[in-house]
Length: 348
Image (cartoon, rainbow, N blue to C red):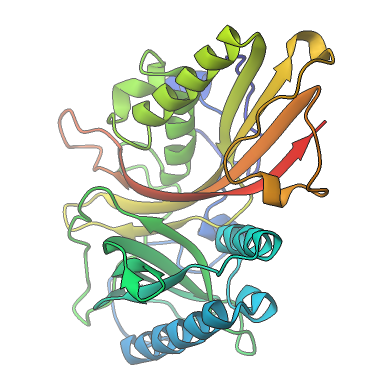
């Protein structure tokens, strides 16, 4: 592939010279996007602007509203109760459902676990770990443990889900203070393997360059890292055999990032990324129609677009990763889950 650096979304100081040479900065943190809120460790449950009971009530109300919106196909209502990466994903899914005349996927939720960080001002936020299973008619698919980030940006704003990540590995125990509140983490925490804002770029370096990338030395292999690289590399090989040029890039998205302390002193990091791909005839020449990736045709401006020059496709992802304590011998960052969906496509 041809490697392109991701767009620079936030400014900051890289945790090490080695990483600075191998990864580009991606994914703004919640602390950067919302200065002064939930950006540092908090060891007390006093003076809370959001109680555990209020978070539970907000979750219940959101699930009820979202389920009703999906059942009735109410895109406008649904898009009012999602934001950031989740808005991009839901918007595309509703658009595709409308274009194809198919129902919007509904979900059945199991018993949730709540992680509400200590905070004293807006925006308020919390994380829920809940089994979620897609509904197809009267049948439910397998339940998958899913992390959902809920945000209340102001007193008059609705609660929104700003991102969700289906887990393919267990969520480790998260720290709580004496009052039962989760513990937030600074995006620049130097006691972790890397500062949390470096987690996304580290993953991107491996997905873009493969297991030989320098960043692979501190990142575990898995479905969201080396396997994602292998899948893209295989598409590149197939394109080459068909006489086409293919390139891909995982890069940071301008959405908030969220961090919570794990019980062992590490951090759960939730962040958004874009996966951008381009398939084209060599040199941009005109040729036979280029196949369109599955799920993208309904997102085209015109359904009869034909790719005689190139196809561009964009996925929006929300990832969950564990950034271990810097003192842990031989520890690596582990991306424990991710959820992505086609969100933009074009054919020329």
